[in-house]
Image 1 (tube, rainbow, N blue to C red):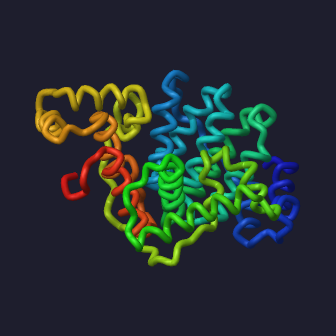
Image 2 (image 1 turned 90 degrees about the vertical axis):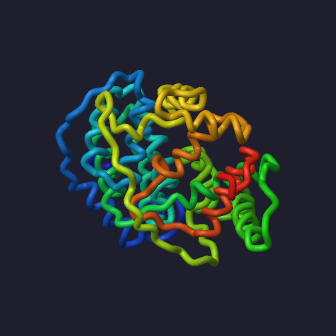
Length: 315
């Protein structure tokens, strides 16, 4: 598969960063070269690309390979969106795989620089399927880098809650990494800086480990139903349909009156967004076999509560 691109990927660590390719990197290149692509099975109207991408990302989080490959078929029916899908794939690699497999996360971003969407043409489908399978086959995944990004953004906007002594080192590590990558004093950091946009600012956090205990969460992810050819978890606050649903819930619908009453009593700012964030924590953001730092997770939850002017023990 793709001899020229295969060679470019194989030599990528040496040519871009001046380091020898790891065994894991070589293994990924070899597996890509020998990969057999599954048949296409789904077509979706291009106007539903937001729901499609939402569904795809969550299928990766859940390690649901059959669903992920099914959804890529629909991506292949809208070739004009290949560039957009490539960017989302880079975001997923950093946001939902992250430190569970740094090499794979970086490999996905490297692929995005090697496989030009237009020149690769219908072979984009092959690469998307291969990378999705690699991410789904992992026994663990992690959104630690996503948490770093959330905290970094809040710090930049001076929107953090008052931090405890235990939380200050977390913020310090995040902001120090940001400064180091922005300075770009070596080829690796320079590459992170130049390609950080591909992963919405999360690529710079690859390799940032905290001196905390890393734990694995084995809680089962919630089940879903198929609605209009897509899994129900895709209709969240990041889609137009999801936002409409959230607004209706906080305004009051039959059978869910308690939601409206709760937000009226607590006077929560932007109630539909608050509800959307809460649903994300219990469903959309759930990862099968998640690796996490508990203090980092608590800080992110406190940040969310702070943004909604809501105390954690009232949530």
